[in-house]
Image (tube, rainbow, N blue to C red; front, side, top):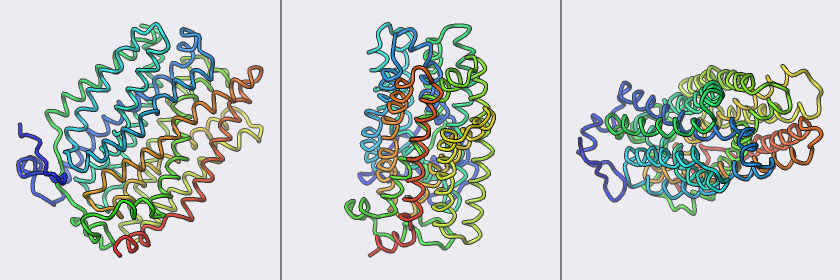
Length: 444
């Protein structure tokens, strides 16, 4: 197997390039194979994230935790998440993504095991902090790796496929975690997740490859990052309105995702009256509905691009509307009485639509960022976005704990706050993101 060699500027050296195929040529079969591997990586990532929320009730019972204390532990996953995303993102400018991804997989495997044997809540806390540090760079590094295989106008679908790995992870969690917990105890889930990460790492070691495609390979005629200097001062990049707005709308969308990962399973059980097994099945059905919705919306956006629509229309405004509708899905049930099935439909919309930002956002940033700085900028975007994950679970815990006699109302108020946050993201994205204008500014 070839050594992973990179230059001091992060370019793949000839030995690695020979493994991947002809330089700067789109290779669909190899590209989609890598996309499938990264989708499996994303599925394990989200299984790791959501398992704590799926097990919220038995964990709170076993460790004698209040909702606020549990919210702190759930949020601790994000304490080092953003920092590690930034640090490894900059490393990704210089080191092959293939090896960074491999290291992350084995870190995930190791840090899950202590939870299976924990008797003190601090062990659970420490494990989640370490896991968050290990998983923080996963999406930006995966997107950066993927962009080395796909040209600009073909990036929507593969990035969305990676995001569907998250949905697959949530779906598997909804189906398997209650079953495993019922038959072998909740701790067994963490042993199985450790094994899954190790198996993926061994497979990636054998089959993972580094792409060699650059922005200059795109043939759609749109303004692209290859027209920029090789490097743009970070001061100029990080004060660009499109990049700043992308970070803010990502933060608002991740607020919704954090609530989905941490609190929807317990909301179904404690507020809507589902038993634990039924709550898992309903949760799985909700996330499963997101797969065809997300893939269809992504295909539609990519089709718009290929028919000549601007990135602002096909990605920015499209994503903004998805965030706005998702925000209404969280906000409306708190103020409008409705039957449970209607609540579930709106929750499904709120859990699915805002996630389109995570498909469109990296592609927007890649379009206006030099290839040599792409990993760092995408990582900074993810770092800022995922800060919401450290805040949203705790705020929901406050609302629930403040309404012990009416848990449903406490949950609804927590969701309503999330809806309001997302509506501000909709406005900011609509007003602030102008990729073509930013590209002209950064060229100057």
